[in-house]
Structure formats: C-alpha cells, structure tokens
Length: 151
Image (cartoon, helix red, strand yellow):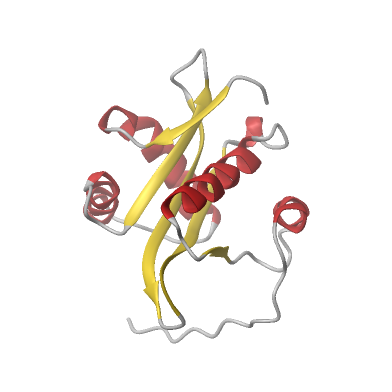
C-alpha cells in the first residue's frame, strides 16, 4: 500500500486504537474491563515501559488501519534486547493491502536500528491468511508453546 505511514502510538490515537483493540480481544474470545484497557493504553504511552505500540494509517488520513503491540525484554542467551510482537491487528477492510507487512517491516527496521537480537511472535495454527504473510517474512520454528493459567 503506497502512502502508508507507521509511527508510534500517540495520545490522540486513543479512540481509534480502542475500537481496534476491542475488536482484537473479542476476536480472540477475551474480555477486558475499562480499567484493564486504560492500563494497557497507559503502558503503551509510557516511554519507559516495555509494552509499546506502532500504528498505521494512510499518509493522507488520520484514520488508523492497524496496530502492532510489542514487548521489549532481555534474554538469557544474549545481552541484546529481544522483541516479542504480541498483537498485530489490521482493520478487516484493509487486510491484504500491505498494512500488516508494513507494521512488521517497521519493527524489523526499528530492531536493526536499535541493535535488537530478534523479533518473534506466535499465531494460531489455523490462521491461514496471517500465516501466508508470516511465511514470506520470517522462519517458522519448531518451538511449541505451553501455558499455565494462573488466574
């Protein structure tokens, strides 16, 4: 998609981001209260918090087309920062237009500029549209994730 911009989330993005974030967590079968959503937004905007967000929009428009939430963290096998892409959301009408690719490319560019060691993410095994993109941009690993619910 030509004319697409990707930038850090800004306070003025709250409404559009909130609409997309709600669609994202509902899509995943989750629920969140207003306080939890507000806390996530606070973390995203805090310059010293490891949870960050990029947003995308058409260059001639302020309407957001997608976002990428990412978490920067240390790793035991390297002294360099590692980046976990936790959430990638593209508005349904903008899917297949390059928004998701551009968000990931922006994280790759940022990582190279800041000396990160790796960018990684997970997706559902049956998420065929996303996996087509991911297969073109990255390497599928043999790792399997296990979860323990602590609630």
